[in-house]
Each structure stands twice: as structure tokens, then as C-alpha cells.
Image 1 (cartoon, rainbow, N blue to C red):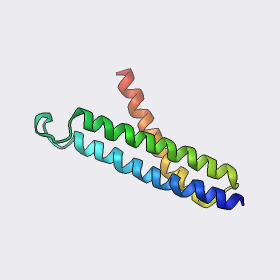
Image 2 (image 1 turned 90 degrees about the vertical axis):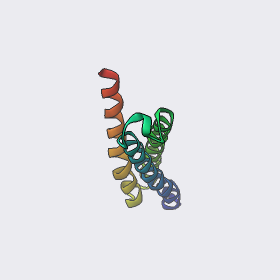
Image 3 (image 1 turned 90 degrees about the horizontal axis):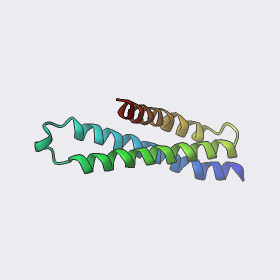
Image 4 (image 1 turned 135 degrees about the vertical axis):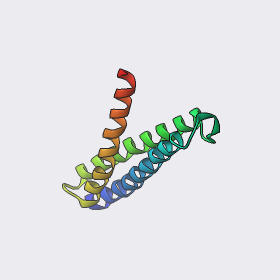
Length: 101
């Protein structure tokens, strides 16, 4: 029963973490795509992409932890943590640098 529950938590965790990476990468591409006036994705769009990616990464991390707690050492949950963990660390670093600078 626990392995089924951990799969139910782990598969969405992986998908959310991958979506988070895609959204954060999209926000970086939008910011680096040229002069501000010429961009199609400006401040609100970049904020939406960044915070949506952040939310996806955090949810993926939480679901990965839940899946790992339900089945001790389940591989899909570990993969979800390996995907979501670094993204959450990157986002946290960006937020801390942005607030300290």
C-alpha cells in the first residue's frame, strides 16, 4: 500500500520539478533575450514565470519528501528530490542575493 502511495506522490513530484526547471529556464531566457524595450516578455511575464517555477519546485520537493517518507528509500521519490532540490537551492540563492544586494 505504501509503495502505491509513494508512486502517487513521486510521479507528480518529478513532473512538477521538471516544470519548475522549464519555467525558471524560460524566465532566464526572457531576461537575457535583448534590450528591455524589445522583449515580448517584460516584468510581469518574467515575474510570473519565476514565481510559477518556484512554486512548482517547492511543491515537487514537498511531494518528493512525502513520497520518501511513505516508502523508505523509494527510487522515484529520490529522483524527485534530486531534480527539485537543486532548483530550490538555486531559487533560494537568487532570492537571498536579490534581497541582500
